[in-house]
Length: 624
Image 1 (cartoon, rainbow, N blue to C red):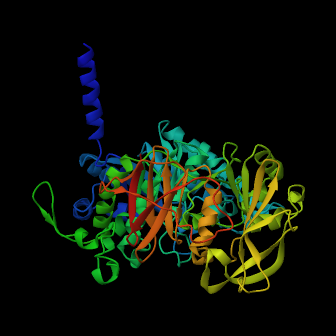
Image 2 (tube, one colour; image 1 turned 180 degrees about the horizontal axis):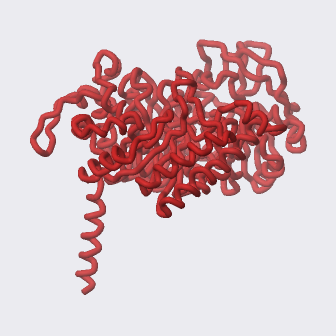
């Protein structure tokens, strides 16, 4: 009887594992209302879906009911819904609450009675057709009509809009939709510009628990474009939103933006989303998977042919479908299909992500998006809305100034023997408050620097804040000047002040965060060493190499560079071996080079391994 029961369980597990196209996550496609409306023509629907489904394996489709005042009729929604259900896909709904997306994302005015009626009607309309739907990332308001100005009164725009949108979410969307369909799950998709949410009404202190879950915008596109989002955000933002309400971050959302930089960039966003252990990824959107055609002269990057993780030439080869049909890759759908199939097995071997805990109070500004730049210099980030009390090291950026009790929390961390690392911008914001810990100042004066002494030099000048301190009460761990060696002045890049059983560090951040990438490896290595006490390992080498750590002895290193790079992995644990989980190759320990006399030597014994990465490529390892 026991054997029969065990067999039933095994059969059940097997069936579950075969339920989707991937074993580590679900892959979905979002369809805008414009394309859903076209699905009234079954010939158009079938022909376009064939193009997408021949190139990528899809588990679920989200059919949008409204965008830009276009409301898709009931008949069209039901016809499209039936079509995809018959194909074996799950089907959900979506809403984009815009009046005119092309007009600077023109939103509804949520104090306007007419607009409020429309918003509610759209929610009710959607709930009639779907048991789950996503609010695309325009459920905010930028409206400054006379009605809104009068309603705001003496409140700030941030205070007014967060209150307004929280009320609108509950009274205009959630309650009416659940009255129509008590089983409906309503998920809010938060965009990628999280540091500025509160100014437009997104309320992260209430929204993740008020809605049935969240979706996460992991589209980072081209860092030189309008939002200037760093590649690492595609990973970091998933972790941040998951920490707001663990278990209720349902997935990441990637579009084709940035594909003009080469298809490596598009694939990379998908990989980073999955490296953060998102349970599902949405490919935005149906029209992009159809219309973003593959052009080798644009999409094949110069570093192809070097053995990179994304192989453009291999991706472009014709493929055979199970029914014997030959498919020639034609659109970005094929890139998504290849990239997601490639990392599926890798992701299945990863544990839960871990990183350096950074405290970001709700609705806080300052050092905007800095954690993503730090992730790009090899510091694994893990952002929390509560002050971490279980770490040897806590990172505080300028955002922490929004906590009126921040100094007391810092003192508790230091009294127990932990360290606190603060940025120069936070020091400037709270320097009078922390004088009881150390009398430090971030002055209004600036310095141009390019020489970091024993830590190296760079080819360009960068601008930093001049951090001041009391001699012998605090010590410069890394200094900078122009020049420093043979010069007459210098300024701390990393400063240490002891307090009780712990250490307060000040990390000087260049005025242009992008200059972090220009810092020499010697500077970055010291930053990593100080901040990584909880992690058991860190990397040594130049910038634009990310480290992703997991709680089951697995880790990933990924290069964001355009040329090959060799780094060193530094472990505090005497490992018997490190094994590449894809190639099976084992890394050998190397002897530490003591030729450089570093004033800041690691007090703990370390063990080093050498890793070489191709451009825009990753490797996955397990420690033994």
